[in-house]
Image 1 (cartoon, helix red, strand yellow):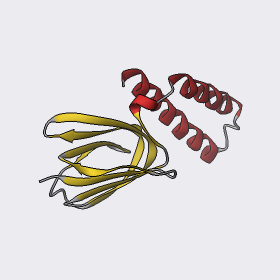
Image 2 (cartoon, rainbow, N blue to C red):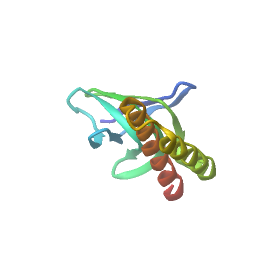
Image 3 (tube, helix red, strand yellow):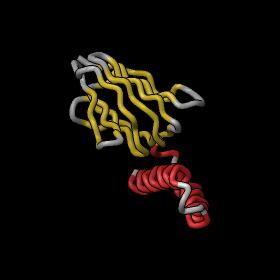
Length: 135
């Protein structure tokens, strides 16, 4: 019995189809959504969402954070950014990482909320680079 997965970015619905399992990057660790999963809402960190048919991974998408809503029959991922791993530009992501690193170095170290925001973006871009290199 499959579950319906949707991956939605601000620009478009990237995926809307039935799969056997979805593994996604939760803030507190990776989590799998499968049929009859208890309802859960969770925050996502930057990382790779993998879709499965049976035990075989079929598709990989990078998400740059967001949240997921899981029920017994559905998994909806509302991503800040979402792209197939095959479309990641490692060069562009590396340039963003360099700019974010410069912003981190120049930031007022007493501005904790700014530092936390920058660190979250840095971690997300690092995950995007990892996904692009490995994907």
